[in-house]
Image (cartoon, rainbow, N blue to C red; front, side, top):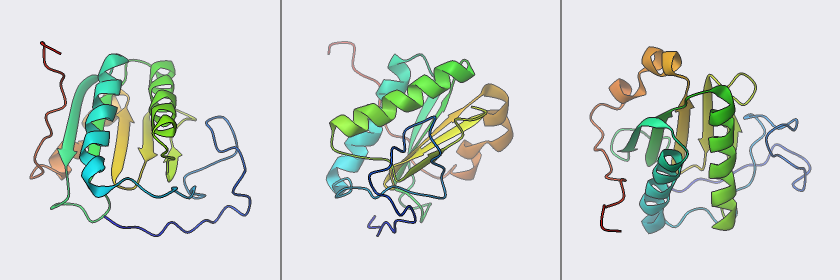
Length: 154
């Protein structure tokens, strides 16, 4: 999925990490984007990272045939607002190590639903009641699920 990221933030060097004045309406330029063949691997890595950090009920969906917004989406339930913020921050840090930056993110303030948008991969971290209420799995019910779990022999 090719997107042209328009920058509404006049200062591209501004710190847009959690806790700053950044919001989802002021996206960051994504340097180079995720190579198409790497988006699925990136989605799997993010699902594994969420699992490693104790998220529950993790689902990775291939929404290429269902959504015009993204190619892959990760949905996970957090155990607390602090844990959800930490997972989102660690997901963004992992992406930075791979040379990726989020196009945008939101939800850190109340941590009921945190979204981290990498354009080709979007991560949704929910508090339990909000996940049940919004039921994104039903919205994308026709989307195939990605196998993200590590094998026991690895």
